[in-house]
Length: 389
Ligand code: DAH
Image 1 (spheres, rainbow, N blue to C red):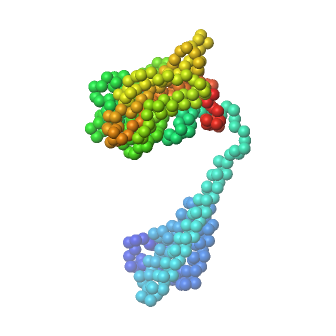
Image 2 (cartoon, rainbow, N blue to C red; image 1 turned 180 degrees about the vertical axis):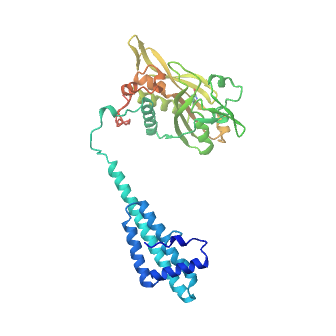
Image 3 (cartoon, rainbow, N blue to C red; image 1 turned 30 degrees about the horizontal axis):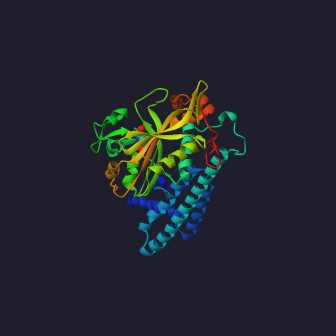
């Protein structure tokens, strides 16, 4: 390609321009015939570019600041008005055609690059999995799935909230005002500083999701909220991060009988014991009135713990009728609406069901532990599937 580029540039002087014109005339590129052969040449060059770098060279050579089409454009000023009009229109068409050819080649090259990448990354999905790389479902994920499946059958939906909560959602709205003794029991992790004048905490229970839900949804409400919770505590049955599931039902007619029926049904389904003894023991929680703790029947022997019939009881969850003050805090009229709530520790019920002795091991990321206690990935829990026994 004869290069005009040494002589051009945005600041080309009029003598430069004349010189360029002379060269263009000598080369004859400005005539209609030659525009069409220029188009031929440039589109062929674009189509033949082997890669994006080569294509970029074609683009610069044609349309760049010192490109051949750009040079012809610059000559327009030296033509008579009529010539300029015709030549300008023809050059614009040429420019668009060449640009389109470059764009088309770019797409083709990108497509080819993608195809090559896909070919390279191809895997044969029909190959059997290597035994050493088969994953397992963590017992806590399995437990969440089981709990969700059981309450899902009863018509509950899953609600979620953030791990970092306001002091108000985590405590005050749940009828645990500042200085309330229940705050001490929670061994709270407070975050430094304040957000919008509020202290932030790592939520100590999943109960704040009740508050979030009641603030934005109108009754009837029927939700469960599984999730992470945090307390400054560490031994065989406590870990600073653990999981709970909260439940909340609010409507105009739900009473303590519904609470009992729902939780008895849950305990029996979860532990897979149809006639599991379940008892409700009076208790106290600031956010429920009346409140109860739920125990299930068990037998303790030197051989271990057996859930089911026996002379012993094992506490597994807390519950109660939602305190009218909590409803009021969320803008729900307690004269019209009522309902129940419950909360339980997921590691606790998981340890009991699967005979896992130490809660801390759930979070040690020990692969041998996971292979031993984990679940097959396709073993989805469902009531009909019978994964509960
Ligand atoms: N939030 C309680 C805890 O962390 C558990 C709980 C008890 C939740 C009773 C409830 C309830 O909703 O009614 O210990």
